[in-house]
Image (tube, rainbow, N blue to C red; front, side, top):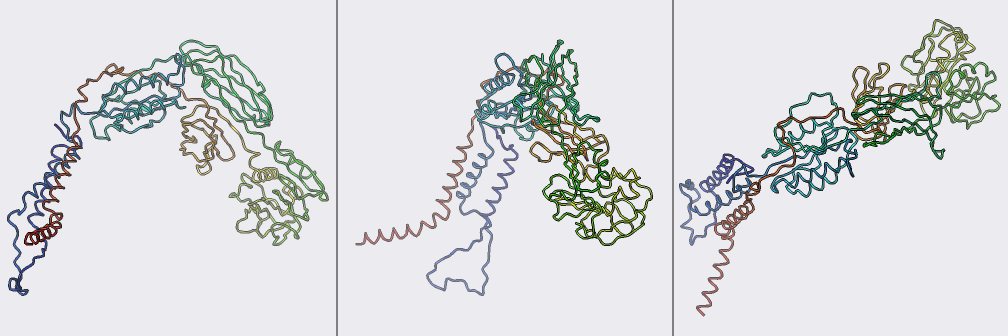
Length: 638
């Protein structure tokens, strides 16, 4: 006989406290009672205080005894009194089921996941019915699928519903979690049963000693597999329309393999895929091999990478990545002297410029509109740059006009003037604007701002002078100023793309230059922000599901197409003293008997009996009994 939820001393402490309070209430009862007397001469005079004497004995010992017995039985029910010995009690087991991506590998007629689920169900059926079981699905994260369930059917249903994930196994974390959850319950710990082939990823952490109650149920696997490891793509530095593609493959097996790598590309408008190229690769055991391709396109589409022949793990033989289109900015220039602006616009290949006379003005132009010393009858609906506009009709009011003034400098706070440096030069004639507090002051003279950028829809930039008709035409900052203005108006045309295809899990992005953390954004495929850390120009984040992740660092954008399953790095070998295989538990483990329901019923009956015999129920019933006796006596007299 033993207590499951409380120790013997804990039971004595709780029961002693309850019993002491009950006895004290019986000894110190001073409650007022209504008493009927025949005459007032038996009433104690009010001026003589009644002497209150403490009780030295208990008037109703049987009532107290029933209460103590009832509360003791209820406390025994809470403590779960059982017949038998603690060694024969039920235990708490944890099944750690490998649900990593490698479990999708084929094994016979099914997959490794099918074999592991069958082994897990065999182990579950071997456990005594009284033992509680928890199922933990383990890949890169340890995820509890159930609580400690006394009903094994719930755990069995969770095992059947388990499916492989997309990340590699982190066995050390899974075993640490199982050991922690067993200690947290405070009950008698059973076994931690790991079921899987034991292919783990290198987490960078030192492996801890396995638990002493660990049992390993191994699943045999075939490691002859070759798969894609990493895909990298970027626009050529010399030809923005050319994609440079690098693909890496890895041989996980123990024998050399010859594979064929092929690439294709397709757009939504195409009926099929266009082959890009094919290369033959020879992979040594445990080795990598790389292939490079080039493909010219400005359209957005899907790039497919294939590896043949297929093997036991076909999930890493194919990957698809979305390629963004090459953006271009349509610029419409209204000028009577287009030769002044043609060079600065032709220097950017992503800008398509159209030059028109002011008489040909249209208000519905798209992209960017440049107005050279011209005020249209109707303001453009698109973004616009106004060069030396007349005072009447300027989108930003002109406060004054000055002549032969030195240029004071650039505003480093505004992106349109980033990196601009100029020597001392004078402006022959320049308009000074009345900028609003929210306007960006790009360039200034002593009298005020002469280049103003206004944020909004549409964006507006106003220059109080013509750069090609002033002393600024000799400065290197002139084409850089127009490049900055185009970047500020349409930043996507200057975006530099780097696309990487890899496996899900932890990703580290090494930035080319130091970028403040406030200028870095990491978002998932649905646009939701992902948590990340930054250290030594390296951004690190984790994604456990396939999809794309976008990292924006300044004017550079990194796209991570996480479509390849993460595979293992090494094979975990259990220590020789670890128990292995399906166990056989003795039937004596089921011999302990639960008696707490009967104790709860008996305790409730004791309290009910005390209330009926000595409590308010008897006092409420006494007038009815007296009335019944008087009525019976009257009938007898008749």
